[in-house]
Image (tube, rainbow, N blue to C red):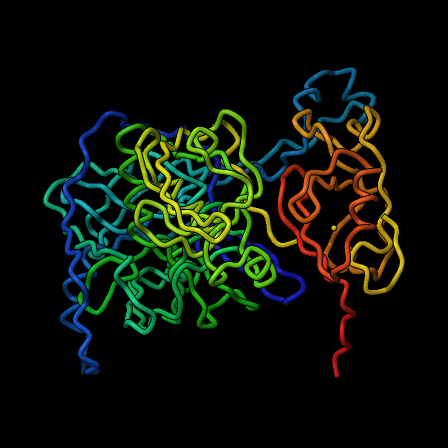
Length: 499
């Protein structure tokens, strides 16, 4: 079982299956795409409570399978092969033969969903990760197949398996973008190895992310009971259509506490199609460093709300630079879809085929503009970071830059703080007084001030001069920090203590 800890909240995010060990993946590159049963019509929402979901369950459960994996465990892995040398044995063990490593087979389980009659199965990457042997068992526990791994995508925790069978009971796939908070959902899987189990609940939230479980988080949250062993199983709507792949729970105990997460089927389908076609997932990027639009930044940039993604910097020779996107632009729409925040934009871009022309709607100086851009394939190492919200010594306590000391950027500073060569000018922060407005805004030594109130900063003297000419108690900075460039507002107004 995988666990991600959140010590401040005393809680855990749990990936819901036991793990396995090394597996050579079998790639079926170049295969035709599976023929899915798709029903993307909106769910009928008449407000009436169903007396029984038995007809739906009977139709859906044959499509949800058990996945068994096996691996070899060495009980004494610390014994080195060098101990085969007699001189070394004499030195370390007085000539005695050290204990021989013992091997044993360890098995684990999870769930999966049949998505095509010819044997394609969706599950979680962590269900089959490092497995040496994988078997797929239909609910009757009589039909058991050896499974090949078509491909895996750890960044979304999705894996595609293939079994050599035909006329399998494939599930009907829905459009997960159409579900709404409050819709009834059923979770189907094999919790704790008990056998196929169905639980019910509602969609508690959509677009959950920022939890650090996987790289591309866009989870459907549900209160339908999900437990270890449910991983890779189906989350279906009241019509029995697949809307998500159950993946994780938030729990203090390791069991269900009413907060479960599923990868939306639209995202899983994108990954599946790429793995079947290419054996890997190729994602696009724009070449921008983006950050969320906080209320303070929305006010500073005169934005109508807190939605969209603020461009902190544009990479040279990138698709964004060629399209004319500039630092300070706010991307509010991508290919006709409203951008909720920087994480949402990252998802939309990543699910775009490289080289496809798309239209961005941006806000620049309060005016909307349409920009055409062709995202390129992501370079090795992923797309630009999404930065969170995060600013010369001067006088009063209300001074936003009080307690900040700066110096010019020299060769020593570049080496010490790993400042890239493209940062050609700016003022390096060498100290920040604890408790000052800049400290409260998370400005730190090693950050580089690039702009003050949208005016470029050439060096330390320029930064000091600009700071002394400020009259307001708020200042907008553009800074380089920890490998990325972002905007930051420093507010000199004192913080009222909690009462």
